[in-house]
Length: 339
Image (tube, rainbow, N blue to C red; front, side, top):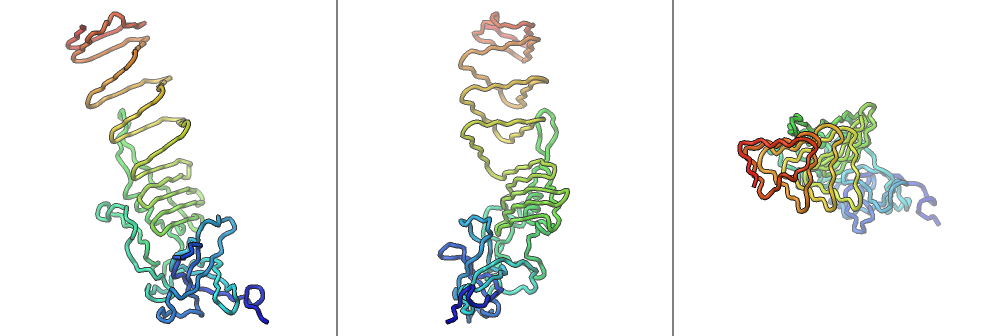
């Protein structure tokens, strides 16, 4: 008796197009319309009548993952039950160039309707000129199915980063203005290894000679990018929280610039020390008042000259004779009141 299963009968290969990935068992199965075995007419064989196909995962892939294969993808495989052809098994995805742009209502096409996006969150197009990526649009006729980031054509991340670029950031103490660095994207095929999701997230490991980058981009414009020279640019388009359960150490080998365009607040639970080993230490309050509250004692040691300039000085209840200084104390002002 002939047994129709893999290894005991002929090997039957097939080629088809994925039409459904909503596996009710949630184990990564896909429904595939197979050329030569299923008609293009969905009235004859609807999508929900196609058999579920198991998918082979890479050997280095965690078995807890699911295949990143979407509707409209071309896949290649074998039948596990030989000539019975009821147990298709997917061996891989086949990239290519779309030769004919078909309708979502026809078989062997992406069955999802073309819409702009079903993922809210990005700014409106009229607000900044960014065109949000479509999540259910099929590649146009004549275009490759491989990512534009890998082909050197770029994509939505490049457009969004350019449109949302932060410029003219005013630095302290006449430090000039700061601009968000441009992306050094200069990918050349076949060096940029890209993972691009349907909503617009992107991960790039770019090995393009002279333009090597590591880039993680969220569709809202938040990103982390490592430039070819090792510089890191991080941008968050919303709130950012860093929580460290124990110690945190930050070492800056050169200069540090921090700009807060809103209010600043810092609470230290147990002691705080600022040590300036060379150069000057300057605090400017350009508008508003400056209040210093000390619940205990306060000591000011000045080895040079202590200069205090004000329109008026009111020292209520202070015994100024107890001030200690190894140098001179100069109080100059329009009015000085020592009570």
